[in-house]
Length: 430
Image (cartoon, rainbow, N blue to C red):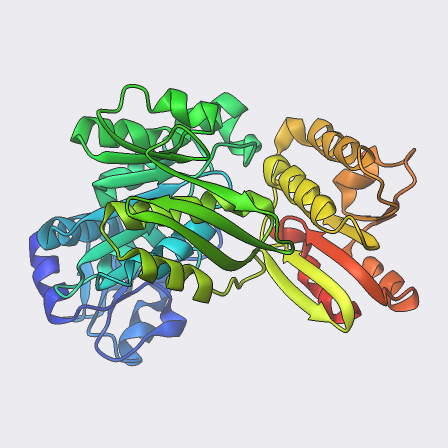
């Protein structure tokens, strides 16, 4: 069956599911394969649960009249999503970056939904499977789409651009993330720049932070671009000193507006400014932009303020890399300089050969500040902290045991680490 015929079937049953445990009646099940699973084995089960059909790529799992055999189910999913995106013809903004892309996406969604019937990436569905599924959630009522793009290897962003065909794009920043997969910082820079490369060829529009020298350099050859930053940019703003939350003053064409948010960490200034800039570009009413940013509540362990009695916790443990770790520490210690501070940090994963030097650099950053209460969790931090006056723990369980026996009763706590360390478990210790 051709992709066009599959698309006709999709239009009759516009719900695609790739997890047989989440089947809903009337959906289309696409059987994907990975290192530890084979969706083909669950085709019959998906049909029994109510899927109208299952798309498979292994003939032995055929169910007469209920399965569609293709050469590669992942490619079929991606081609189907691309065809759907081209058929809808709506404007799509692609977003990527080493840090802040999910927060910026959420802020953008809050702002642009003030004007458009919006569809955007939910959760962390930003890879070669998640992006097609995001596109297939869009329909004829959708007026604007936001597609988040993640990357672990060179070429990932280019591939996702081919699927989603964005008209607009933003790279939040370029930092030292996933160095093991990219090979080097230059590999990160090149891969994130693939969004710019695609938009340059398409003559699309790029939004970029002019205060970031790397992004400014990458945007030099882009014809259509809009800059944001503190000074000398198309859209400007400045951060206001109001810890723990980030507030800013933004310069709109008709005057200045104060933008108050519920986000913590001064590093979020550029994410908030980007959302305001893009909202302004698409002619969202500035007062509605202000309202959307004020009402947005961070979640999912990203820049959250959690109060536990007299303890203020900055929960930022969804992920971590050297760039975001240093920014979080600096912002936290500057923002809570008048109270007792505690750093609970977990290993930064996927750094490969750079792991030891980057973890050591984080500890050097900490030593530049007068902070005594530092708790480090994970093998990588333990390797480089042996001669330092910091407490180290093999895993989060041993850290929790310590915190239960030595409770923190007041002050401010930053919790930051890679998702795999599971530092969210420490919340029960306060």
